[in-house]
Figure 1 (tube, rainbow, N blue to C red):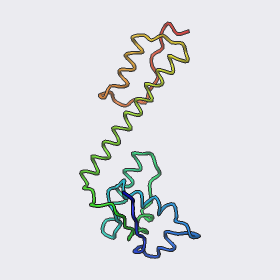
Figure 2: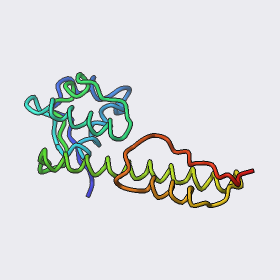
Figure 3: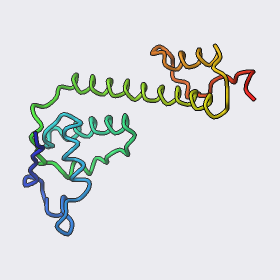
Figure 4: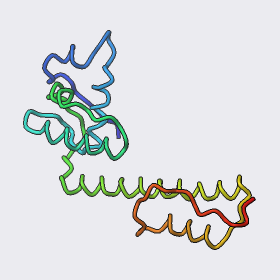
Length: 155
């Protein structure tokens, strides 16, 4: 399904949305953000919720936060993203994305163990296996320490 959009209801849309005949990046980003936040339009009534959802999504994915004036200036933007996603559904989607990013972080830590074995000539010891299992354990608290214990057999 295509993402259809309409900018005609945005106040001063020629100045807000376009520059030299090209769509401004912030307008383009907001159009596609309607999918991420589950809201097909920005209105006077909902622009704060749109911004809140967008900032939440941006924090999860490591993007710079969109400024309030950017969203406020785009009141009137409409897309074919409908019906509006409930707050509960949006929150559950964000939680799932957080879990996915946590899994990716843990996989990266496990890859450091593999690289340690491959590049340092370390033996696969019970300690290394235990460290890898610990990293991949869903109940493991995030520590940020991805370095496995060194084997006594490491040269």
